[in-house]
Amino acid sequence: METLKNTDGWQIDEKGRRYRNVGDGCVDYEREVTIGGFMVPESQAESVREQLHKQEAADAKRKLEAQKKANAMKLCPLNLMHKCHGARCAFYSEADGCMGAESTQGKRCPISNYMCNASCALYEGDGCRVLKIMKGA
Image (tube, rainbow, N blue to C red; front, side, top):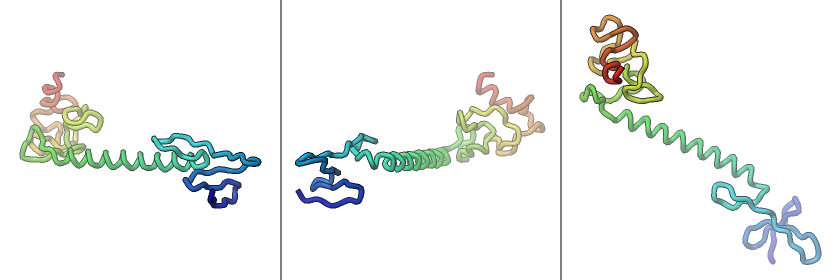
């Protein structure tokens, strides 16, 4: 069996598995653990977990950016001449999306493209009357 020497007492066999000789003819292979569907030597498990965590975080960030880009490409259901303004729209909330806003004050109105404020005829109490009617309040 051809081996490569390692400084910590472990050697690597021809299949790439780590082992050490513990006696005459006795070979002790390093225990392998399953991480993310892969068999990994126990000594490398923590670094593999960190790499997988970083990769998952990067994938989640990439997915969120793609979702934001897809939303930006959508047309507004109330003003079909304009694309969705997202967080700048008076009717939009990050948690619930379109028609999910609680307060419309100071945000862009999707109907008129002006800022929502008390001088508008549709403004009632703390927000837009149209949004309240659409939400069924």
